[in-house]
Image (cartoon, rainbow, N blue to C red):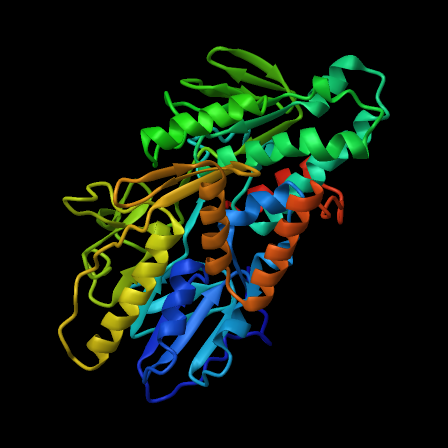
Length: 441
């Protein structure tokens, strides 16, 4: 598509080294903020003009929060830094030979390039039903899921067909990681406390929530304790958990598993992610959809291109398959690379990255959570839930977002209510199919 003549990136040429950051996620944003007082021109590129706190996307999808409480304008985070620039563009590739980034508006040269464009949903080559499921990777995905689920119940009160009623009330969640566990628990609480009040003419004993996991346990990235306790909580909440089970097909009405079939109009896909690798890198620099980097986050085979966060694979004896694709890794790598870039500009010796594991956690519902501490201690129940809540509030960007989210959680805790059950825009699966074909995320 030709670039309109009146559009350009409009980045001024100055006598300073230019650092381009691709992606305003946890890694890219922390890197940009740490470079505020650096003698360099910093350009942040992202297809959205906001940062998303992805760990809470599932709460937007299940009517617990509105999207503006987990999002913050990128320009707001960079204000007050005259040498920082933000451009809302889609990066389509890079040219390391010419030291240029290729965008939807035009090319831009760099002295140093950092790829921090995160990850995308992994469908494991099941492209045939990809347009029919609901991913949870972006705010638009969460809003689509919320609208779709609520629309189904609005239609359910008007249907006389028992088969259609079952399809609209059944929900299948694929993937037993933190996102799958958390969204399943949130849906179970909706079923118990919220939906029966909104739809008193429906029999919610007919609503079934199924969690499908391919491995033999939940929360594979956490301890056996966490996986076992999460399973116990979910069974008590009435969630049908099927382990060692795989999705073979989905036609929009029926999920075909290796163990049977489930009739449903709603499949939430949280089975995993893969690195969002841009075009232009050497094949030898990419392994399993992640960019190979050294201990300094430098991309293999390059001198001035770096990668951090989900898209980067920094292999070591402790992490032979790279670090886990979670927010704390991206944040720490962003801050560490900022320190190294400052040293590079001063021609000082750089330091290798060492990940400080602060633990992992997942919540299943009110007063129900599991926490793994790096010292080997484990917690569950109310105390673990408080830890989970405190950590997520602390990591949210912006005081306003912290206050709004905490207020929503306190209100929900006291009243068993969720105030975001709004269908702001109706969701159309046919439209999703078209938009998904355009945007491969």
